[in-house]
Image (tube, rainbow, N blue to C red; front, side, top):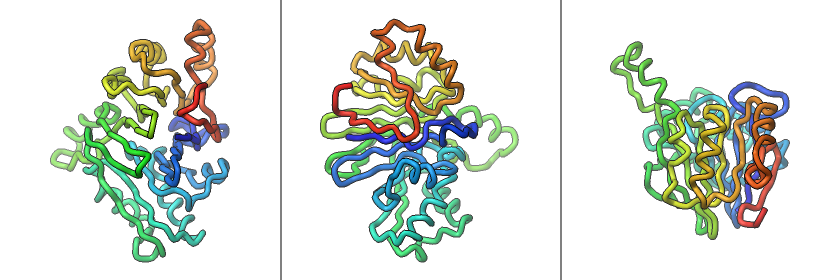
Amino acid sequence: MEITFVGTGSGKVSLERYFSSFLLSVPEYNLLVDAGDGASRALEQSRIDFNAINSVLFSHFHPDHLNGISSLIIQMKMRKRAIPLQLIVHERLTEKLEEFLETGYVFKERLGFELSILGFKPQESFFLSDNLSFKAVENSHLKKYEGTFDVYKAGKDKSLLASAGFLFIGESIKVFYTGDAADKSDLYLFKNEAPEILISEVTHIEFSDLLQAVKEQRSIRKTFLTHIGDEESLKLQLERLPLSEREKFVIAFDGMKKDLASPF
């Protein structure tokens, strides 16, 4: 399984980093995880063929994870895409995504290729290919909005408040992606699954909590840090660690590629 970090920035616009997104590649299958503003340009910068992407998985609907998908689909159309494309979201969000696409005049009937929107069920395996599947577990990232719905949007559908972390399972590797988090408990969503690789955001959690989570989950041999806001602070915190601990962390950058199954 190979990963390409397409974007590694936080939700704050940066000239150095696109919004957080990555591509997982196994033989004959490519999964893009999240597609925020500028996703098409970020993919182009990483020299990734839009039309080689088989599916796009969304962790949640914040703009830095969602708002680039309409443009990306149109770019695929302009490049004469022929193969089907799957968009995969929490099962509560399938209709919301279709509505979102239509506000950008993305109509399935006019694309020239098959576009489907599929819903995943938390805790259940979702098979993408013979060599790649995933499980999702809801995290706490969007719980901060529950009070807003209760006070200002009473009676409105709370289905938008769906956010997840993921365990990606390849032939010989398990990769835990936190998604955007909110609480240190989000770092332990798959503690019983023994993931070897952790991809963790570092904007919404304390680095000390991440460090402790990595220590406690002994199966994790390498942690990639993404969704980066204050890079200098992150570097300083890593520099304070003993070399044996520091070597377990990698600050990801846009365009970085790694074979996750190989030793580092």
